[in-house]
Amino acid sequence: MATFGTPPARRPSARVRRRRLFAGIAGAVVLLAIIGGTVAAIGFARAGADDDGTDAAPPAPASATPTPTPTPLTPEEQLLASTTDPAACAVSFAGDGVADAPMLQTQGALYAGLPIPSRDGLVFAGWYATPADAAAFAIPGRVNGSEPVVCTDQRVTLHGAWMSPEQNVAEDARIPILMYHQFTANPQGESGWLRGNYAYVGDFDAHMNHIATTGFYLPTWDELSAFIDGRLFLPNHSVIVTDDDADQTWFDLAAPLVDKYKVLTTSFMITAYRQDPPPNVYVLRRSHTHDMHRAGANGDGLITNLSVPEIAADMEASYGVLGVKEIMAYPFGHHNDTAKEGLRQAGWEMARTIEPGYVTIGTDKLALPTVRINYGMGLDALINLIG
Image (cartoon, rainbow, N blue to C red; front, side, top):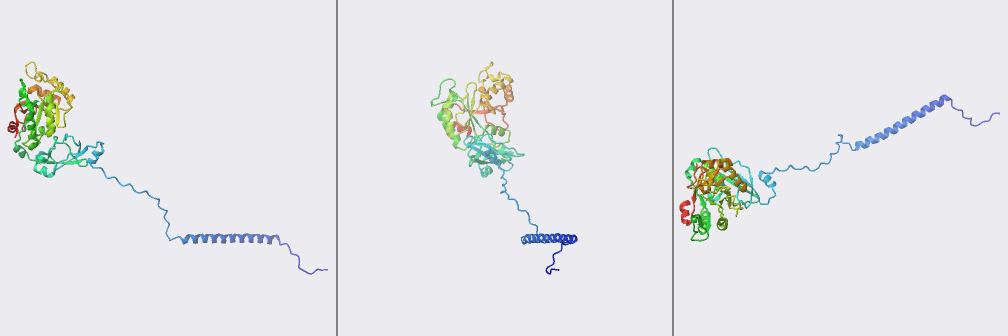
């Protein structure tokens, strides 16, 4: 007999089962696609929230503060940077037609090696402390190697001046080279055949005071050389002070007065016998030969008896002591053409004789005249000779 109720389920056929499997797989794929699209859409939406429609530039790297380009040093600053000397001074040169580079000098020492410029058709008229002094050729404002270097903040500027050759010749300058020898503190002088060589130190004091206080210009030897060539103006009120032999009385009595009055002088030393350092800054040491301050076979100075090579060798020995050439003084004033040639070959430019006279434009540089100072020549005698 049949039983009524729910009929038993029939197992699907294999074909149906395959269809259902494919349908499930397809649905899973669609669902995954939907989920993936949704996630992507959400990502795009979030990205769009920050997008202004332009491509975002990558962040700029942090940059360091740029290093400023250093200001180049001036020539004066370069000179000062090259030395650690606290007394160094950069000396600059100014003026129309002046192209000389600045140079280092030492404060307190005398100016050394100041240039002497040249310019076609003109004569150099010197260095001055101010442009106004240069324009007026004001001798009190003229600066040269007879004066100590004075600077402000390690710098000073010298101002050059020029004049015409006609102006230079019209000055008609006659430069005296004073020649002293020994000195005495005895107003009555010394005895013996050299009495005339001894200047009374009281007279020398008056001489130096007169030169220092009445506006004399004190040329250096390189200036005198340029003056002789017609390249440099020297005023008529100029004087050069020299001493022969470097006697002990020069050191003891005269040199202190040179320092007191600050008058540039030259001591001609016989270097085989004396090699003393300068007694003060105002004394220049120059050669009186090394060992030719002796009589020769003919009774004249030995220098007139020797050959050119012998003379040159002696002068080179003197240079080895002094370290400078420039000017020498003939022993006893004796000289000849051989002596001159010996000096030339040894590198000397000028030589002083004992012949009386004044240096002018065109004077023979190897036969410079002099103004001899003897015992008993007081201030009036000096004024008569040099003004």
